[in-house]
Amino acid sequence: MPGTVLVLEHEPGCMVFLRTALTKFGYTVQEAVSSDEVIRLCSSRSSAVELLIMDLSLWVRSGIQTARMLKQVWPSLPVLYISGLPLEYWSKEGLYDFRGTPGCLFLEKPFRAAVLREYVTSLIECGRSAVLSG
Image 1 (tube, rainbow, N blue to C red):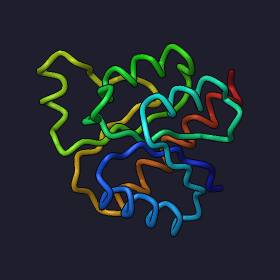
Image 2 (image 1 turned 135 degrees about the vertical axis):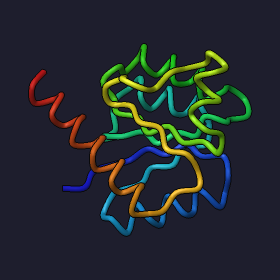
Image 3 (image 1 turned 180 degrees about the horizontal axis):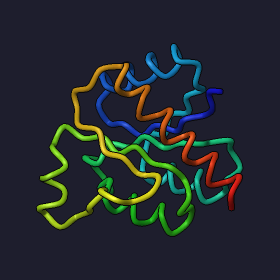
């Protein structure tokens, strides 16, 4: 049962890929143009967003800063973090460690649509289970 996915991606080509793949899989895609918009949308919780896909390498505010702010306003929202840099980079820099964080996964670019679908499905199911049990 597909749902709504909020996407924050600064690379136009990657945004097209994400939108096309997610739409093909039956998801509704809501695009954000900035970290501030993500925080505003998630703070209001007025939309039916079930998953956030966010690039960690953002311009104005880093994905790490946005992730920390987001976890304060909506800690249970599942997040798929994506980056062209490997997870080891983000962990080594001490910026954020995604491993073992419920409802959070990391996917290194480039990736195939089938892998994206697996991650998205898993995270949305995780989020729905948390709502039902919480």
